[in-house]
Structure formats: structure tokens, C-alpha cells
Length: 423
Ligand code: ATP
Ligand code: MG
Image (cartoon, rainbow, N blue to C red; front, side, top):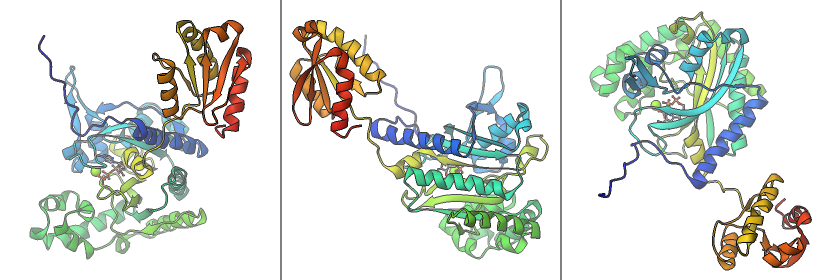
């Protein structure tokens, strides 16, 4: 048989391994702990939905829908899309699964998302998010609660230093419309000097021009009309209640009047936690209020607010994390001992001790692998000792070794680990 070529991984996907995978897992574990503190209920969502779920929720003119979706026809001829975000699918489920009965509903999830983007550091085609949504609450306290949860998460991950909460309001429907008209007028005057993308956005999605990273647009963004001129009294009060809630909770924030979110469904509060430690991919967590979304999916008007954070970007801020250290290496001398070793290994592990036994190798090899794995204790099993019902237990830090009855092995292992500061 001729040697076959190995298929390459798909561009923009990642194979996460070792210390990077530990950092990834730490982000998810910390999120799980924090979401329970805030009583967000866990949901598991489908990885694909009918294409219209995203097209209608996010808006046809958004970058995600117009350029980034992985859409395909399945064998039944239906147009499906790999989820580019969680919110639209959760909103769909809220309507189709009768979750209205639980409102105000707090839910959280995590998993992979798919966007056809240009891959670079911190930007992938399959990436992963943690996500929190609060559906069926119009009160500004809901916004505050979500922001407090995000803030505590970053704190508990140990990445809060150098990450700033930036906040804006997009106003209610009518404020947003008035602002939109003023932005069109402003940018239409300089149309020819804008980037091609922004010229295209002008009529369809002028708010997005404010979000442009193109230097040609930035000069005109600086003197564009800001939302404050157009805010209704209600929208102003709402934003005031959110910011005073944050102050009361001791959460630091800064106002960024040019902050808009790329998707159509946002109203009132929009926010991002940003850092300058990740180069161009500086937004680690983003979200806001999406009071208009349920109607675009054919549901009754339902106020809601949520956020999502990129797990990879949070993991990059964390840096690598160590894998679990080996506590006890079981070292058998000979086949009979190896077979008894299986039982001892199982017993140690059932007691919560991190233990391993190599599949092969002589005593010297096994001891050297135990040392390089950072083992604190070795349990050495010879045929003669096993016949007497004992084993040797060795302190790999101090070097002392003594014989103990097999029945007392676990207690002795715990004693040694405690002495060595590993418990
Ligand atoms: P960006 O401006 O970086 O494209 P976004 O506004 O498109 O982000 P959201 O849709 O708000 O991002 O998603 C929330 C978070 O998910 C982002 O803040 C980021 O941490 C992460 N994220 C989004 N797209 C990607 C991607 N392609 N690769 C890795 N992480 C991503
Ligand atoms: Mg994006």
C-alpha cells in the first residue's frame, strides 16, 4: 500500500493541548462556579439551527449574517447554520419550548461557535464562548446583575487587572432611530472618503461605522453625533439606574459613547470588557440588552439582556496552567506485582489520590519517570514483600523508605503527602 497523506486540520480550528487546555478548562470551571452563585440555570443548546433563526435575529446586514455564517443544505434540503452565537438559539428555545413560564429566566451555557473570519491570534473559525442570558426582565437591576457576574468571573479568573468595563446606551427604539438618521446625515456628507465597507454600511447599518477599525473612518467617527443628544427621558433614566447600580455594587466602569455592538438586536445597555493585553483582539466579553429580539422571531415583546465571552481570549489572559501533579507512583517489580499494583492503584484513586503506574519499563525507568512527573511518593511492590502482605513506601523528596502493611498503605500515603505539603 502506498503511504497516504495525512489530512491537514481545517484553517481556523484549534487542537488545544496540555497547559493551554488546562487554562481553557479553568475558565469553564470558574464560570460554572460563578453562574451557580448567581443562580443561572444550565442549558445545553443545539450546535445548528435553521438559518432563519440567525438571519432574523441578528439582521441580514450584519457582518455575521452577511459574511461569517457556516450555512449548508442538509440532505432534506433545509438550510441550516452552525451557530455563530448563542443568544439567537436560546431566544428561539424560549419561544418554542415554553420557557416563558420560567421568566424572568436566568440561563448559562458554553460551547463551540463558528464564524468564517480571517484567522489570527485570538480569532478563529471555530471558537468557544461562555454565555449568560437573562430573559423576561425589563428592570435595570437585570443589567447590573449580569455585569456583576461578569466582573466577579474576571476577578476569580485572576485577569481583572488590565481589563476595563466600557459601557454605553443605545437608547430605546425611538432614540436609536433618531440617532441612526443623524448618523446617516453626518456620514453621507463624507461618503467618498469612508472605507468601502462603511460606504456599504451607510444606509443599512450606520451604527456599525462607529465600530470600524479602518483608519479612513476613524476621523469621521470622532466628530459624529453621539447618542446622548437623542436619548429620551426614559432611556436616560434607565441608563442612570444601571450606572448607579454598578456604583452601588462597587463595579468600576467607563463610558464609551462610541461603543455599539455589531448586531441589530441591541437596545439600551451595551458593554464590553476590553484589554490592551491581547493586541487587536482586545474584547474579551461583550453583551447588552436585546429587547427587540423576540419579536423578530415572531414572539411577544420580551425584554432581555445577556453577554458572551471568548474562552480562548480569557485563557490567553490567564496564561498556561499546570496539569494535575502526580501524587503517588506505583512501581511494581515483575509481572505478579504489576497485577497486584492495579488493585493498589484503584484503591489510591478511589481515595482521591492522583496516582499512576507505567505500563512498562524496569525499576530504574519507572523511578525516573515518577520523578520527572513530580511524584511525591512511590509505592514499590516486590514479589517477596507482596507474599508477606507489605509494600515499600518511599518519600521521593527526602529519600526515606519503609515497609508498611498493604492494609495501611492509603493512610501512610496520606500521611506522607501531608508531611510534604501536598495535602
Ligand atoms: P470582535 O469585535 O472581536 O469580532 P464580536 O463583537 O464579533 O468580537 P461577539 O459576537 O460579541 O464578538 O462575541 C463575544 C466574544 O466572543 C468576543 O468578545 C470574543 O471574546 C469572542 N469572539 C468572537 N468572535 C471570535 C472569534 N472569531 N474567535 C475567537 N473569539 C471570538
Ligand atoms: Mg466579530
